[in-house]
Image 1 (cartoon, helix red, strand yellow):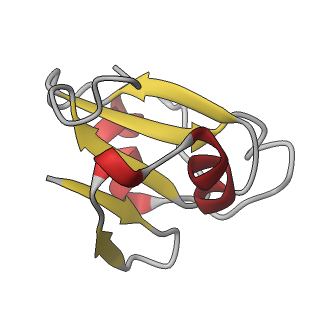
Image 2: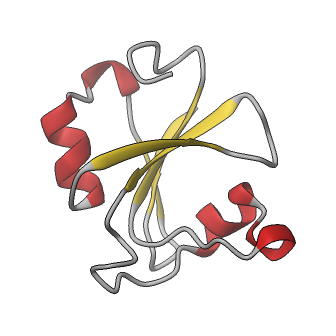
Length: 91
């Protein structure tokens, strides 16, 4: 279960085994930062670490996974969501 969650709300299934650093950076649109999904400790997200500085749109799916309403920190831009065991090189 790995997918791209776009800021526009669309989801696209992907195979994490094919995702290189360069491809991940292309998908998120910048330098990759890995964060744990606080709503499910078995999930991770790859996000653009400078997304807020770039003024990217809020990613509602990412915010839900990160529990933004509880602590106020938002997830922005397109993200990659994956289970810990799927993305061994990322987790």
